Image (cartoon, rainbow, N blue to C red; front, side, top):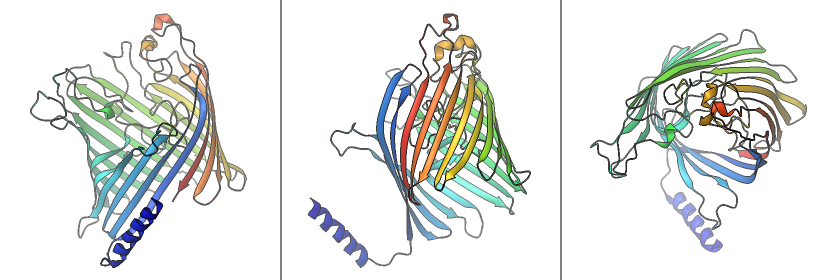
Length: 436
């Protein structure tokens, strides 16, 4: 088998050498991630441990500064030992798009499957939309300070033949949006707006058109056709050199044909001061919650497919591919005191944070969740996080994540929670990342 593989590789290299010279330059990028983790899960003392890996490999095909293509594969995330055959790890196309510039202009176009993220300055990524999806993006610069970007994203489409659909047209889930950007001395402002529409269909077996990306990391789960509108803005201000102030805020609603409407807002702010020994940072956020009777009184902002880096274990600010319980902070509020980038040994850095967070959902909604994914005004917790990162080589890093969460969750049966036995959560994870 090894000899056959060697012969095939040699034949491929010979054919490539014999082919006409190509005008396309190829650049390769990649990321290998390994994560070894132990800890508890879900605040019920259930111990977990696993070893996993994920590989992403990308190729950029550059014809000129005005035309290029990108293709990225992903293998995993693969949990060691779950594939007993040794050859059935899923390999998928993660991204595949073409970038081109409209001739004789500065207008840039991206079309295909690509990573998509709304502006975020106080948080690493947007809570509303941080995903990989299919669509078209058009970016138009004005002078040196301004830029307007428009996009259409096809989130889902129920192809004919996937089920017996009573409607003749396959339902779709589309997003349309505009993002502005203005940069001044020390100040960046990025307003944005999204309009989305989700179609509807009923199958013979009674199930409805409900794409997984409506609920996997989002909360747009009402019945029937839906119109989605979300408006937001991000700000970053550096009044003087060591200080950075940032704010992200948004308001949005969903109108459902067959369910009660959904409406809410959030704001997250950050203040950081860069010093020679580290960067003290204060992070705070608030997101509106559900009123009593969640189904009829949803007060959370619609989330398409969000992410939030408030903590490493309850939320999702992990170094590796698998991290926290939740990807968004909908229905919560909190404050995080951090010291990032501390270094006492060359090549070794530390990030430390203490975060208090609580729910903003009505206390009588306890039967919708038990601390793991739904917090009421009677639930709160404190999380301690320490991330230590060491540069083994220029492209190879090792990291140790330690986290401990002290819970204070409601167990009052009158609030729908029942007599549950909550326990503190903890996590220890060792990561290795080779990135090129």
